[in-house]
Image 1 (spheres, rainbow, N blue to C red):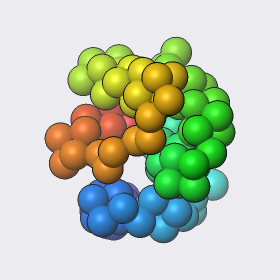
Image 2 (image 1 turned 180 degrees about the vertical axis):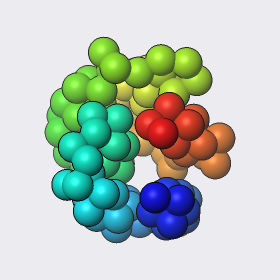
Image 3 (image 1 turned 30 degrees about the vertical axis):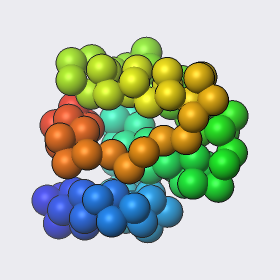
Length: 105
């Protein structure tokens, strides 16, 4: 599983969000883990934001909100606020991706 997380992290840092989404699809299909699905939804939300589909991005992030806690929840709430205020998501930082990964594992 480590190789999937490494590839996901690299894709997210390089703003290749659709690829990041695809990387975690296979392990999710095998496990149906809700936190792994949430990580996929985060990547998909960034795809939507890139395409200026802010309502789609917000919808995905709001689905994750009830599950999130700790530093990842803070990052998630920040992304939600950006979109709710009419902005596009900035690329996630290394720390934000690490918070997501730590929470989802």
